[in-house]
Image (cartoon, rainbow, N blue to C red; front, side, top):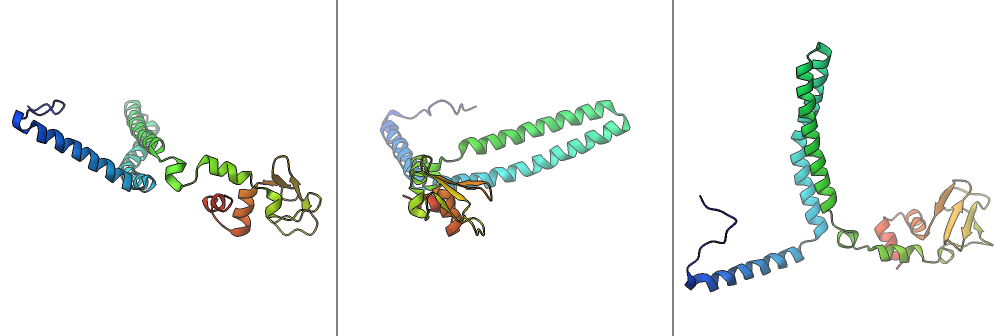
Length: 189
């Protein structure tokens, strides 16, 4: 039986070529990884893991249904067995979900928006985006006839007393221009 953990036995004449091939392959793998968008790769992994999870979900639901049937019929042994089977299936599902959660790319790699960019967008002067008179204005989030939007320069936020909602520059851009969070952050740079 071949032990896969040990280094293959190679004739001394070929050792140098073997070392070169290993180094070359490692470099090629590194280059390929650099070319692939990590968020795209994670999305493909997510699709694959979701396919793996589907039969486990069905099995867990069947075990729960059979457990309830055994409880109703008074079969204690059957109900305990199916409860344990459901517990095992649920543990597998949690493992897959954790795998997806903890392997997802960071915001910097995933969508091109870093936490620093978000902070900079939130610090963009709100009163340069929207016209306030003495710190008040009509709310842009709903039809307003009297000024209900109050601007607070110390926090760079506005609060609407009618819709009872607080807005920062990112919220303003998303609402008024109907754009995504990422697009709003990028526009406020």
